[in-house]
Image (cartoon, rainbow, N blue to C red; front, side, top):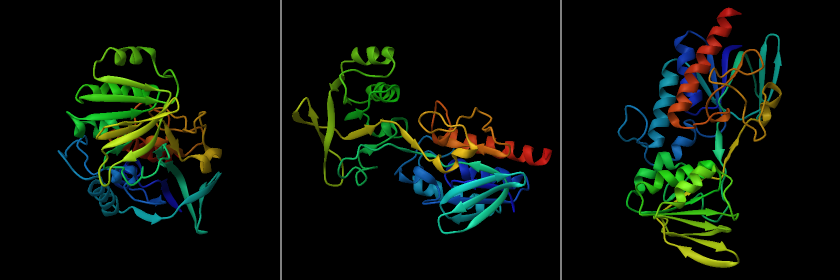
Length: 301
């Protein structure tokens, strides 16, 4: 029986482990694939305080090492089910293991929704990105494209238009579903071109992206770009724990900045919860908040 079980070994989960261990609680972190989470995909991280530049893999390794040095236990297991009772929670894993804890922090994250075009995964980090805030600065003075029609895509295009020579905004419909004021602001920028009723069909480049092929109203055309920023939404990984949470229509756990859920002793942290900003810094912030909330809950109980 652990004091706190954390599902998810990304920045939110590992930060929660550090704070929980410093409060003297026993901690187990379960991660299904890669400790460090999605940040390990990034070849360079330049927006995390204290590091002018660090690879995502190194940052993930440091987060894991710090949590383990504090005494957190870690297991590479995929949690597939959970049961809540008066004594705590039972977490069931795909390999048959069962773990018990008095409280639970869900830090399962959210993965970017992919386009599904050939070589998308291969070129991720080599021209293909899902985060303009994270990677946009690398494309200063170059041509890029953004895919999406929501407010996030429009905001990404605005951000990139400040430093990039050309920004193509590709959307499969004939109008944007994001905020009208954002679309109007983009329409006034000379270096932004709308590519509507179009879908990306092919990524060009061997080891580095150098262009995309789009199908627009039945015709195929090539856009020469060095970067492709995909902003078509995210996919939270909360389905297995829905019985403990209140999920919104897109599957995110509804929780405020206190990271509390409707289920006593269950907390959420990071990209899996409803929030306006999903960044590395907000993930570690959630991890600290959720851990301290769990500690207070345990101490009060």
